[in-house]
Image (cartoon, rainbow, N blue to C red; front, side):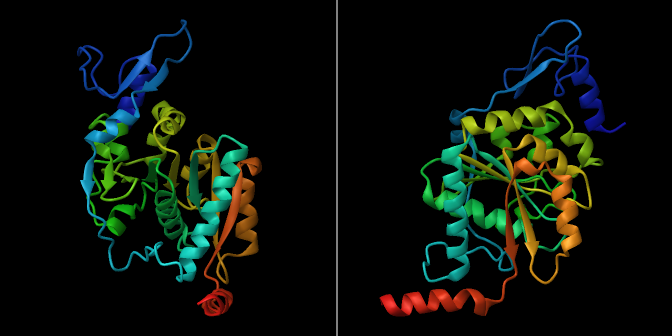
Amino acid sequence: MSRVHDALRRAEMGGSPIDHPATPARPDVPLEFLPVSMGAAPTVRLNIHPGMLGEVEVVKFEPAPESHLLDLNNSHETPAEEFRTLRTRLNHLQTLQPLHTAIVTSPSPAEGKTFTAVNLALAEAQLTESSVLLGDFDLRRPIVHNLFQIKRAPGISDYLMGQCTFAQALRKVEGMNLYLLPAGSAVRNPLELLNMRQVKALFEELPRTFNWSIFDTPPLLFSADANLLATLADGAILVVKIGSTTFDNVTRAMQSLCENNVLGIVANGARASELYSKYTYYYSKTE
């Protein structure tokens, strides 16, 4: 029986997934259960609050050469402008409805979901004085830690299994309001982990600390992970690749999501000439 399943079984019995039921609770335990009426599942409350951010390890911003992270300070860089536009639209939606957590997914692999999630988080962190979280919930093929050249563990899986506190699972990018939540140690069955009630509580409590929490997730048509996470987040962003993603896959992906939970579709892979022409014309006229 896996550690995840064992933790889930103890949680269903009303005990903490971190400590054995016979072991007294420790002050640093990040999870606690509130007693409820007999027969009802205990409510999970995570002790996540802004004060814990002062305990987070600070890492330098040293993206890997192959990361394709954008220079958002360069206004002439066309892809950066596209992400600023996406950021503006999402922030406008946030003024109309409670919107603080979003997953980024795609129908199939290699369509640009991680590229979109990472650069959108960077764009949000550049604009706001509030904290922004970039989390890697693609527990099957995590890559965010490689892009930022940080350690994979401890991370989200270690926190959910009680191996570390939430602050220990985070990294703060030096000079930014961006916090990274890597995938953590490998788990045998990611979907089993994501079904724990602590994950639902995590999505509920993150808005108290982070203005935006953006999560990279697995492709929709290859696992059920993103579908589950989409029901917990405030919204989902679907990334498709021009010339690669088929109409049938887009249709199937949309059907697998709650349609009223889809914030929009990002088209990745447009030809450079289609994008650069309009910006080159604009900047050549203004300078």
